[in-house]
Amino acid sequence: MQDNDDDDEKSMFDKEDVTGLVNEAIEMTLTDEDVYDDSKVKKWALSIEEKCLKSLGDLKKDFKYAVSCSIMQRNGAAFHAATVCSWDRAHDKSVTSHWHNDTTHVVVSVFALLI
Image (cartoon, rainbow, N blue to C red; front, side):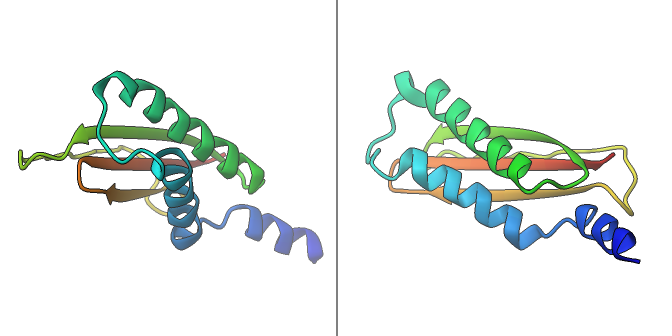
């Protein structure tokens, strides 16, 4: 019976936990970056994505993950984003997290596909 419990746990997707991991990756990358810097955006985005994927992998869940990070200057301009997925709604999940400071806006999406 224990094996089924382990399998159930490995296929559980906790949105709050994943959101926390994403926010931690953003904070670790951008906490000391007080000002938006276009020359650093690519490095920041890759760092956030890599930190997210590492933390998600450390959960040892039965999911494949895709992480997307968008960073833009916060200057009053509108920012709209949307995602559409064709997947198994019962098993596959996603989380989108927003973060900002005075000059930078970040949107990170995590897609978890049960394997």
